[in-house]
Amino acid sequence: MKKYIGLLFTALSILLIVNSCGNDDDVQDNFIPARDRAEEAPVAQAIIEEYLNTHFYNYEEFANPPANFDFQIKFDTIAGVNSDKTPLREQVTSKMVKDRIKEGLEYKLYYLVVEEGGGDRPEFPDLATITYDGTYINKEEEILPYSRRFDASTIPIRFDMTAVVNGLQDVLVEFKGATSIVTNPDGSTSFEGYGIGAVFMPSGLGYYVNPPPTSVIPTYAQLIFAFQLYENEMGDQDNDGVPSVVEDLNGNNLEEDDDTDLDLLPNYADNDDDGDGRPTRDEIEIDANGNITYPDEDGDGIVDYLDSDS
Image 1 (tube, rainbow, N blue to C red):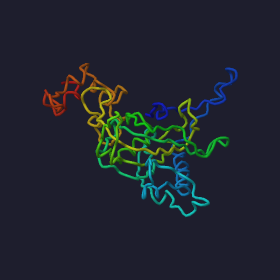
Image 2: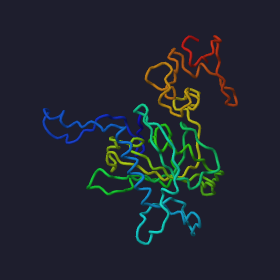
Image 3: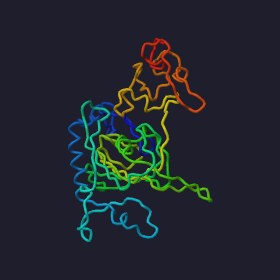
Image 4: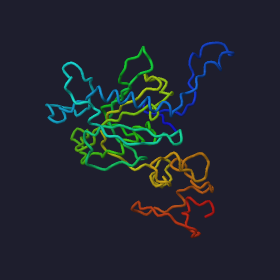
């Protein structure tokens, strides 16, 4: 399952339509199959590593913040007066994450931790409040620039982490939100001790062959998101009373592959998880303090909301 919200969303596609003008007899010729994801993965990694070896971020400003510093990550090329800068490759961390479409395929996902943050750490299906700056790395379209910003917001926006591109979701869980949130007299909000970082994601964890139709992102582009993580809220995407993190029954931190009733609707998006016709919310108990218990009325070891025979 891929994801699509504004410029942070995408949809699953196995075909790319190009050269769509022409008569009906030519339609089939205008369908170009997407490249094999396993073959594309090492290509994407090489492109990202080339970028990490040849670029740096404004680490000196973070070490000694100038007056009115905005604590925004900025990238530049290691060249000329910047020839002595430390490359990103020496400052990033990495972890292995799964492709959501091709079984057995994993990516080495690089990310930069400038500030981990001192508040709460989000779970993978939470709602996260962030600011961000999105840039693509292009090695496909000769008429397009190598690197270009495609989206940004300096105003904190709350995103459903199950709806953003996979690479961003996979990295936000490595950071924490703010230690304190202050409402100012003018109604604005200030954050302190928040997470600051960036992710360098292969196209398979981004938009692959299907970037948003109104965006400037080329196909197979690698993506960079620099971000600030301010706060998070527990996710319950189907509003069934069961936190979505609890509906990750196999514990693999992926929301897409838990489907108790096999109706092709994952549990986190299904308000009748066991398909018995009784809403999940009616098969759990929530007290006045918001504490949730999961009854097992027939005592078979399967809680009612997951038991079609209860």
